Image 1: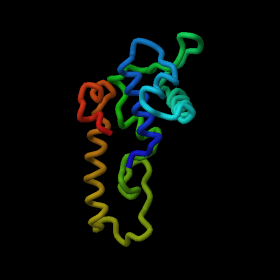
Image 2: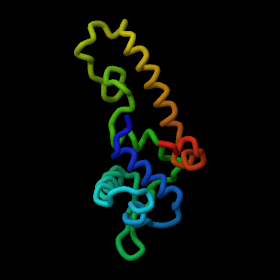
Image 3: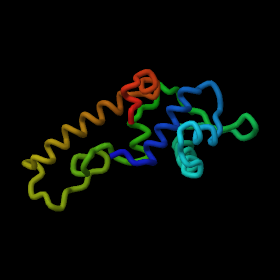
Image 4: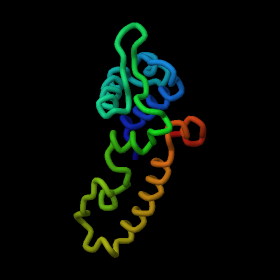
Length: 142
């Protein structure tokens, strides 16, 4: 499940994508997207440190995307905020953990099914850029 933090991060970067020509103040994003400003500040700072965002101080300052929105995927943001995209750790490529209750991963039906789910999630999230998300209203229904 997508954490609230990841959802807010996505909403913020998508808002910045829609307003790509200027720096946007945190307060504007928080009000427009109905998010707590303090929580959003922390999220945007993290995204800046990771290189997704740029910031500028002053009257016309705020945050903007550091890269082209076509070069940032939904998967990039979610992975950074939440970690792996897999529904269970035993099928994660980057955050693998063996299941404590599983006796044989090679025959585990749950693992096989969750691997298919992971592959589908990764396919959609990694192929959906911020521009794609803005242009496809069905993707925006988070």
